[in-house]
Length: 147
Ligand SMILES: [Zn+2]
Image (cartoon, rainbow, N blue to C red; front, side):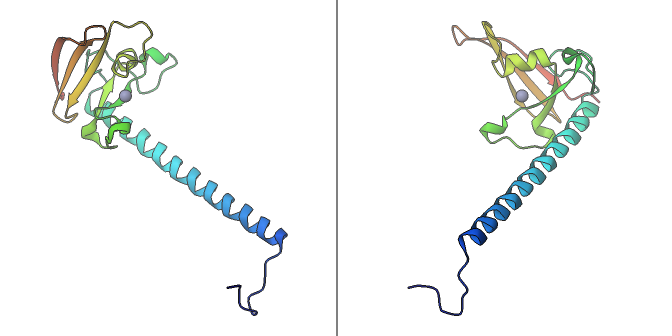
């Protein structure tokens, strides 16, 4: 069944223009969403930094919100990873030393261990070292939310 006679057929040129405008609108919406998420994350990171009193919850090392050296900048780590259904909420975040963060995400080449994190950022967070060769758990410790 074709279009009724009173519906004007779009020319191939008009179709291309419409398609272009539709894609432009989608791209704009994506940029807007991404920017909003980045702003939320930036705000959350500041809140995590303040709550954790600027110290790594795993090691106690003092960290900066902004610094020239990436080794000094505190990371906000999602206790339940975003890729595993974790949420962008304060209780799911902890301030972490960037080097510890690499171990948590097992991104260190030739590392002998990774660090698992669980718990509640607003309460007690538990850390456990896991030997990457044997899978056995090693050193385990807890970190209370600083008052
Ligand atoms: Zn992380």
